Length: 507
Image (tube, rainbow, N blue to C red; front, top):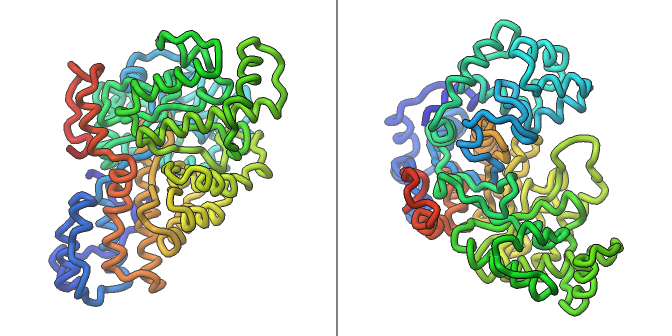
């Protein structure tokens, strides 16, 4: 890994030699340190008996920071475009420009709106027709209001690490643009994600329209199968096209859903739904005979009431989830905070955790992954993870929504719920550059959480060190069966003839 240790990265502490660190840990601690970058399975096999008292204070924090910094990281949630889609230079609704301001376009743009930046200036800032210096003049009056938010910190860290610019200003913005242009060349995804961020593989929920994206880097940019259109709408034309199935009944639509799982279930790492942006996730088990009349209304394009809509969505949600379960795919569900601004019904979000618990009860054989720690209601989701065997928590996005809350959630999870139910990182970006900043923030937060638990005597240092590999990559390998998925993806028909995915995962 090539992460620099500086004030915006892991906190700087006095340097201690590796020999001194091993000596201070004692015999068992030395064995743990030697494990270094071994995979989760190998690390778990290390002996755990006869441990000696570990050092505390600054030395312990330094050891934890170093372990976290060096450990491979598996990124469990992204919306990344394919590299070729970034390199072709085309401008569209999702990629509105091709310059340094693009790093501000996902998430940080919302902070700019809510701090009061006028819409006309926002539109010009992301326009391809304004030069880099002109864009800084638009941003400058509002930058002090947002520069310390989690969204902005991820971008600032990325600018520093990728382009060598410590602070945005009128005089530095030209260097940022030059750095952007030098970096955005073939191979820049691997340079940023693997070489700089230490990420083994990413799991992508594509936003370009396909329910399953046939990536050019299939074992590196692993893909979710999107199920939201299977039950919301449903999106009949999109999903039925290419299946050879004419949809005239609910049974026909069931067959379309089954087709997608038969075609892509072996390649997808999970299924994903962001339907919580539209309604509560309180899906009831509804029999097909009750859903069929509503489905016929949808086919005829008749008016469907809210109650009827929920009934059909509930039935089709469970049909899709049951297919996922039969194919061994975890079910990723959005919970909590909304992207964007000026449109979040917080009073409804507070029920997400309770509804998550009911989903776990209704389908004990399904592996649910509840995303974004249900922020700001993360205490409730922690209770779900502790109580329900099939509940897992993904901390994706949380480190930039509220990095302090994310650190507190992690501390509480470690001492409350089984650690194998935790996934600590997903950057959740469309654009690759800010992923680096988010990954650095997440590593910092993980190290701080572990160090604080050691200092507060809720963990011994040996136990804290043991958690690093499990959390940063071991859990994801087990939950998503990444060894098997990697092998299947390398044999996928569309992957033949593509460049190899060396170093993109186990296997």
